[in-house]
Length: 321
Image (tube, rainbow, N blue to C red; front, side):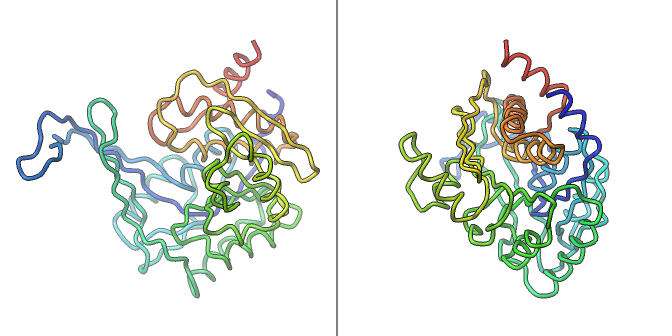
């Protein structure tokens, strides 16, 4: 595992998808509003973090890899803020498209002094891009692809991954592996990707069933594998991961998580680790053990967070004790 992790530093992953600002507003609640039956929050602190494909990119960077990020921001103050946040982490913004038609996506979470989320406000436009914006994103992708070892689609259904853009990306990957963190609404565009990482809820929606259970899990996973001609890594929360490989193999990777503080962004960490490990030559089982350990660590943290290779090695060591 250590040898695999050491290979990360030599790999460049092209990340394409929806980037956003995760905005946290912290405060304390001591009374109800006299105007309506809602709590009154005394605001104390703002915190801004990278979200969506930007968080995926930051995870890759903190795991030692290099990143080429292709995405879109609005022609607004949040767009400038997001660029500055990316640059502060060491992420290149050369492949970002700026649009006056789309605001920069922001998720505002209001948190009380017990770290309980009171409400989330989303500022966004979710229509798929078309026309000139698709052309600009495709041109940026083609430029970034030249130096990439693998391609990761981080689809949050906020506009960037239109069917045309998604299908183009998958077709252009050629011998380079293409990984997808999916959104069910775009399922039909994912055919032919190397590997897709739905959680149970996403897998159920994509397969057209009410939910994923122990009884139908294999049926759902194999259905998606066959329909999309892709390996499926289904993340199952406390049950770990189940791998449906295109060679016909089905494997379980159990989780050893002890503390679950916040699952926000865990999927970003998983797909970042998978992209780096498989691009570094790891097999699918060892890849998912690494990704599982990364997720185990990140859910012990609050909000969108990152992990290091040292933390992953520590978790792997504990899991093997």
